[in-house]
Length: 238
Image (cartoon, rainbow, N blue to C red; front, side, top):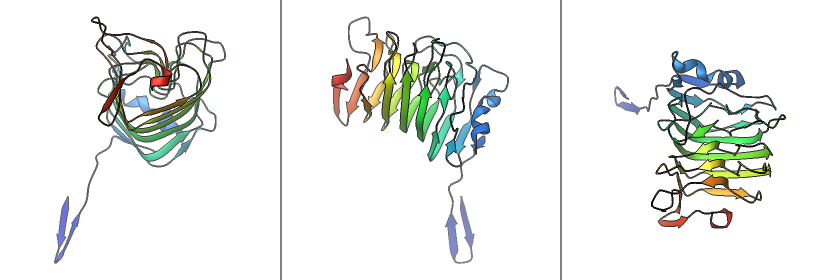
């Protein structure tokens, strides 16, 4: 937008947003923008840091999720604008978003001190719920896993996504199976995730419980650092 007044000219960049997230309640109610369907979209921005102070955030899981074939969940843009959401306790598959579809984008935000735990040991997800198969850029996550199955810092399924310039710091303990630092199952058939200039810091011993290669045996996970691409088959190579 350009405005001219006499000899002065002013230029502004305007963003049209569906919702400005101001506080914990706004985040808890983010799915109210689903228009009665199983998915929800729009442009959401954080206005400031949000401290949950140990409160739970477990939105409903909308739609179906199956190895990159998600038909519901978050389809919009969530722009943190450099702010932080911290001290959230996640105790179901819902995470913070219920799931992120291939059309969803999460960017410019930190999720700090996220406690991913369920006291009854039932299956869980991660920060983004049951499945993440969208786009992520400039995101920081520090999370603690507490031995529950189907869990990881990102989600249960991490498939078909593009993750750039992001850092994941994951501690705690893994369940005996079906969990990993960033997720339970990473990649499915040709729906491989791409990690570009990302760092995963953990001492948990494995990044994921299971990854599935393409039918021809080629890798479905790609981790790149600049122009260099390496096969991601375990913690040491990541």
